[in-house]
Image (cartoon, rainbow, N blue to C red; front, top):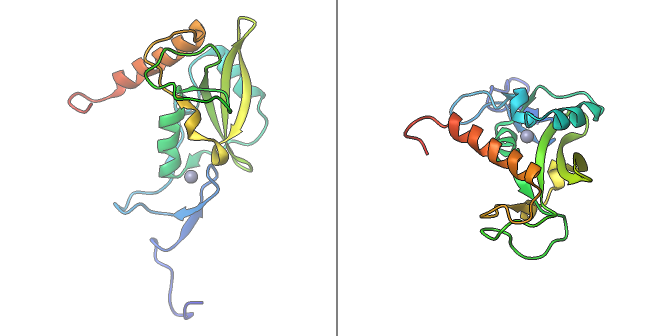
Length: 174
Ligand SMILES: [Zn+2]
């Protein structure tokens, strides 16, 4: 217990991020707030089937996440994923037909961020899996060098997302 005449400064006060559910500093070392508002395009791919699947997930959405979670959102959204127990490393190899895509990340205020993974089932894009961000295994992420046997719809979502990211990158900053 600090002496009662010591008042917590802004750098001492913490905040519980609703996404990772960790207690994080309220400010970053550069003085910026460690709370990043989530724009809709950062949480879900602009696809009608993805958007519909998101609407079906119940729960209050948190409007802000910590800086680290915001970076994770940026990294995961639109990335290809393999099934949980698949062996081997698909980096650089042609894609496999059971590869899905991270279509959305939903910051549920009471349960933490949920990752919505999509696969093509019977010719339709469907949310086949919902994983908690806190326990997601990053080894499942895959970066195949070519489409291979990946469903064309999944590959198109991935390519479109990459194009959006590249378009948003300022000149001179690769
Ligand atoms: Zn967080």
